[in-house]
Length: 351
Image (cartoon, rainbow, N blue to C red; front, side, top):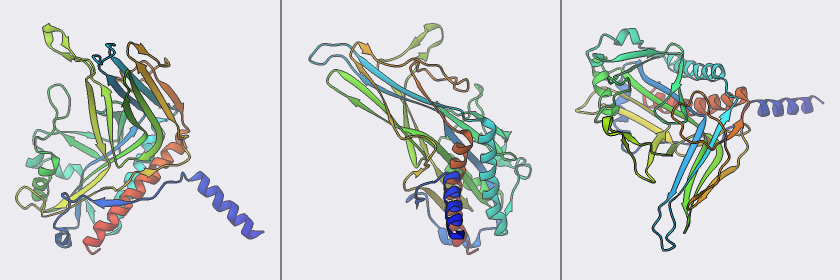
């Protein structure tokens, strides 16, 4: 009887804790070097960025241009699926839990966490602005919300438009300078993307087909394809091209380095997922399709989420989720990815 109770208890725990798939990380071939030099790295860490993105809306655009032998017109198909029921407070709470567990790993190894207050006066951050968590905002990628943990501060360079400036050579070439100013302290960047969908497009002889597959996961990498909006040209109005699409590339990654040698870190470890970490039990796996024949559009009308200011699709299907289960799955996947990478780092540091 006791064995039966124990089995039932384990089964209950398994159901309540959202199951995740295999966790397989890999070193980026061109992003990992000088690993033996981590042994001499100071036991001080500055977390330069810690971003958690969660997808709540997916649009996928397909276009078939006119001019084929049947002399028909253009065909464009937009498949659009969104999730509702996700509560911001639940999302923020689990981001905070992921972050606190993550930094506790470093503290347990005797590594000091360098605060934003300590670095804001550095020459490196001259001209930068800062934003302190907690916050959840629209990201630059449509359909993605980005969350920042409570207590963590992100530094950024802003344009006059308010948008974030991007380094011409990428942040990876700037961070060694930051480590140098911090007397070779470890500098870390983390990007985590929880996606609920993936997509593909197909072209027929006289049709365009867009498909969205529901498969919740911590994504290894993902490309999102949206219909491109017209470009504003001031007093000349705007210009756009039929079939033009805009793509956004996202990837979950962990990059840490120490010291400066030329343009690079003296020691750098960069890791990505070898395959996405699937999150089971939060959404049914299914496929939604939108097919447009040239001069004919098929779709189902619905509304938008308030948070998504840039969504241009008027035809969407909405899926309701259990917020607590959803963010628990997010925590499990993110925690697993970060823990695996910390193990690799601590091994190289011989801690």
